[in-house]
Length: 81
Figure 1 (spheres, rainbow, N blue to C red):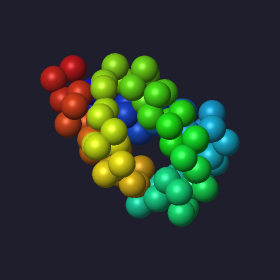
Figure 2 (cartoon, rainbow, N blue to C red):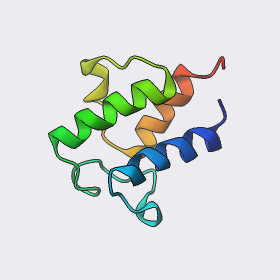
Figure 3 (tube, rainbow, N blue to C red):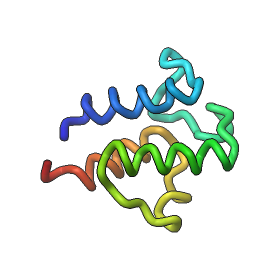
């Protein structure tokens, strides 16, 4: 999967959660910058797993604090697609 595809799909998920696409950059922190609370983050995790067909362990998920970190993780997990 190409980086642009990951970016577009992730932006779509976040937009569905009320995050403006124009405000989305790789350095944005999920809680501090995007205002997601723990319930929002759990919802995002489930949506990402379904949409991208990956399983992210709790230990890995809580290491992913920014949009860019999540994109990099997904690119690595989906590099053989």
